[in-house]
Image: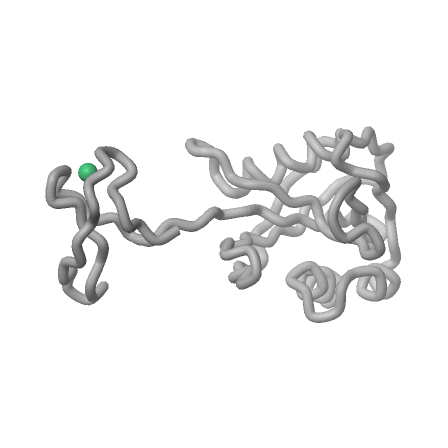
Length: 163
Ligand SMILES: [Zn+2]
């Protein structure tokens, strides 16, 4: 989001030189720079002790391919907490831990994706209304079940490489 108006007071922003950051929208009334804003999301793949990977299919959107468990971060939580929260909310299981793997810019959505590998013993899923299906795959099958070239494919390949 690029600020043409100040979200606090509604004043039209002006561009102000901010050192190495270059020209940044600035509210002269609040005396505040308004850097471009974007959402940060967490994206997780679950892995069990057998090396299987769990992926989900959503109840909306691209339903043919499987995806990871994803969601927006909330203020006040760490990315690790957000990853575990989304897993609990969407598929009803408590992962032991979520380990950060890499970040990626999702150009189509204008979002920063923080990608995690979450560890859990094989568990029964309790799906939220947003999730149509959750399934364990071999690492090889998981890589074939996601959209080629996607961030989730990269995360699955990263997980598979660690076997
Ligand atoms: Zn303002």
